[in-house]
Length: 73
Image (cartoon, rainbow, N blue to C red; front, side, top):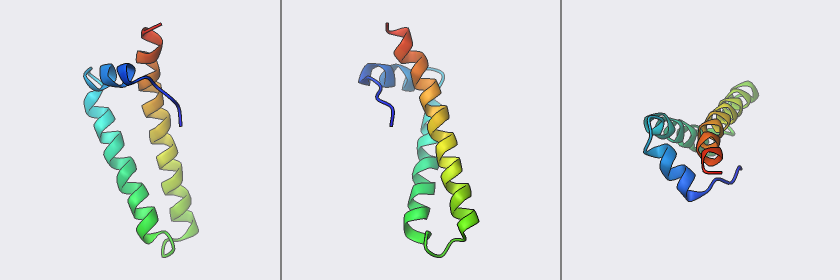
């Protein structure tokens, strides 16, 4: 997990990116919950796809937050 300052996170959430960051958080949490609760019943392909999607969401989140972290320097 990348480390971003609280200030950069606050600035990003209160910018035009705030709604997307909330969407990312909700989808990530939903996928993680589903993997925890149903992981053993899901096919290996489904689990792989869900993990890949979680990774995509993390990358997108980090790209957004990085803009604000770098802007503070």
